Figure 1: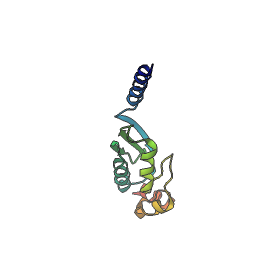
Figure 2: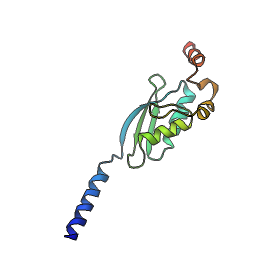
Figure 3: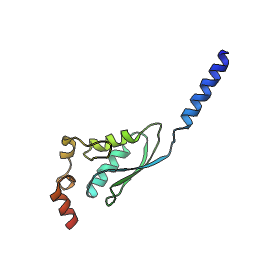
Figure 4: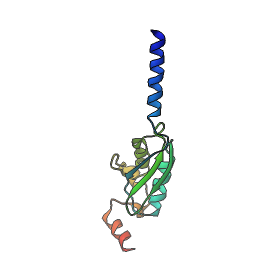
Length: 119
């Protein structure tokens, strides 16, 4: 009976490990406004353990990801991005982190948004 339980536990553990995708793909909304934001957002995402690819599109504000679900989650990636001053739908950057970005990257400021649209 003990052997049967051990085999069952090992089998169930194997199934749960296989359920996590090593090359999961996802997109998330990330606030930003310019090329400097793009570099900062992508760098923060890539530095998150388990993230293999991160590409942020300026126009759509979408961060496209390829990541290992065993090592990273969308929450951990959102946290990394918020720590460098960019809001996601899940996590809002602190005022301190937001205010640390370059003045032209202040995407919450209507005047900055207007200046980027004019250029």
